[in-house]
Length: 212
Ligand code: NYM
Image (tube, rainbow, N blue to C red; front, side, top):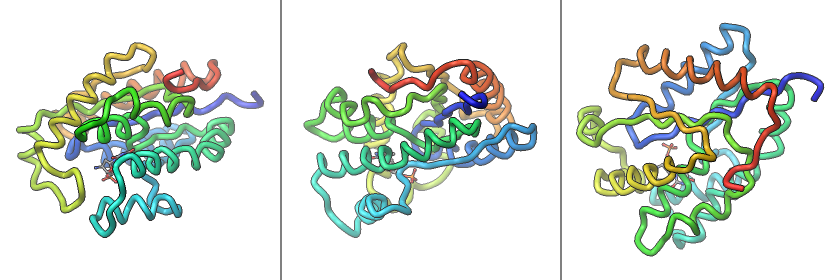
């Protein structure tokens, strides 16, 4: 490796937990302390596959459940070459949702098991750190109404939360649970501490393969 690699840092959590706000703040804070960092999000709605997913989420189109699951996974795989390139260049990637959302959301649908849902993402670049922004359904409800997109109901979100809890039992992934009920700065400080640790550790390690 010519230079020290960047870290792959993922934020996960149920809707309203503050993932997007925290990803932006983290990238800004890392850049301010001289650590190259960029934000990514999944689904990435800018690609051809991402547009199919976006139309489905906005309920403008219907897709068979297995099909859309595989499209979400394909949307991650299509970004892998550019992700690896950036990490090798020493850029830390801060990612808003990843394969864990993929497995948790589809397996919350009837007739899907977590194991099948994880399979298409086996071998993706393995995050050095996954922070789960924990917020109880009642606290999430206080943050306002859900939007109009598919999956944005409290019944479905509770099922998703249970699937995330199952995924978090996997010791092969560096999970950290963050209390998302604190104020924005408190959550940010917590996230920044974990991220700096992960960046320092990752620079001396090879990038791993997820769930392999
Ligand atoms: N989602 C996201 C999935 O169902 N599977 C996936 O693999 C990923 C990455 O899409 N409700 C769901 C979770 C969200 C929605 O919303 C994307 P947003 O607001 O763009 O994060």
